[in-house]
Image (cartoon, rainbow, N blue to C red; front, side):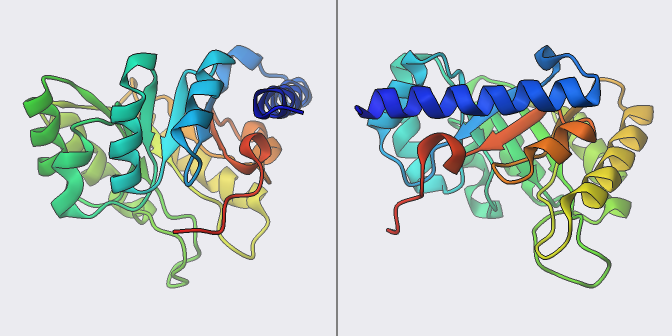
Length: 232
């Protein structure tokens, strides 16, 4: 089987899972978008994915994302930065990313807005919310109590657009209750920012639970691309 055939088969299987999960939740499959996470996979895979109809790709690491976005600039893709972000790299990330899903603290906002402005763009931003129990540590993200202030700063930034929230299910905890907490945070956010309707949640192992809790965007890597290379 060629790499293109492998990716096509994997994509079909993921779309089947999404449709089944939407049916089970009584949701329209058109409400749920797919971001294919290409971390550590080559630009040649990105080209194959684009040929197979993928429009949104995600990357976790700035240097890799920047190079891959430049190499694939002719494809017209939407690039999502979904990894931990250093404040001194924020402007550079906004120089190529169309969406930054991992805004978890206030100090990132000025750099992101500056970088987007220098590019002549408006960058969509999601507040990354921590779903870990208080004091547990683990995954990145803003405490739910910090979300209103952070969302307000994004909404007020000249070159940024607040579009919603993102989260990763905590390690060692069933994802469903965590995604239920995220849905509550998202509903509270929409009360103040009705335009911020996006909920980015769900990966290869828990997309069904995420869809059940209202996710509008999934970030899928290994179920499409296979086991991540053990490099870098």
